[in-house]
Image (tube, rainbow, N blue to C red; front, side):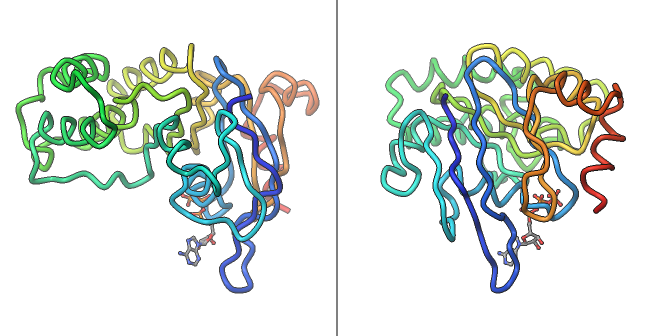
Length: 236
Ligand SMILES: Nc1ncnc2c1ncn2[C@@H]1O[C@H](COP(=O)(O)OP(=O)(O)OP(=O)(O)O)[C@@H](O)[C@H]1O
């Protein structure tokens, strides 16, 4: 397992934003992380990527403990936050070179060129980030997440706000990345889960309410409609 989560919890005052959830994720499979607005998805992702300290519980990323070995975890993980903090005044290549440097990558120029190609940024590569459309900014976010070739990728709503053409392209890219990495994506789009995900977890009000393969969940609820399963599990 590349991701193992043990009773992870985050409390904000009296609110249990994430309430003792446990799950795991395997290499070569894409795990869809679903839940209504405010269910605790982003909070969970921030804890897995060491940006937020849990109230209790812990997780291991490729065997490295998120609390005891945060630097080792960060080396192995690529993270696309919901709102990517991109430096809008920087040029695409300049920004990616800067990120590559922070990871201690040796052949920076070559690696930046590789990821630009990989995420389909070639035509926009000479622009400032602030000049890019939302979809292309999202690609810069993806590029910075994969630049150090991490074993684990955590993508928080990676396709939100993309037009249908960009959506298809970014989904194909994610699908390809998922072949040899462990990938978690959060999304509100059921078609995306159908198109991309092998496994699914659903949280509601911080609690885990489903944890299985997409196929097994459909069989359990005797329906092919993920949306109706989602509604049943999250409207209580
Ligand atoms: N810094 C904070 N202080 C207090 N409460 C917070 C903080 N961050 C998140 N929360 C609360 O924790 C809960 C979970 O938020 P989170 O952003 O993890 O949800 P989400 O599932 O990612 O939602 P969405 O689908 O809308 O992005 C929400 O009720 C939110 O208001």
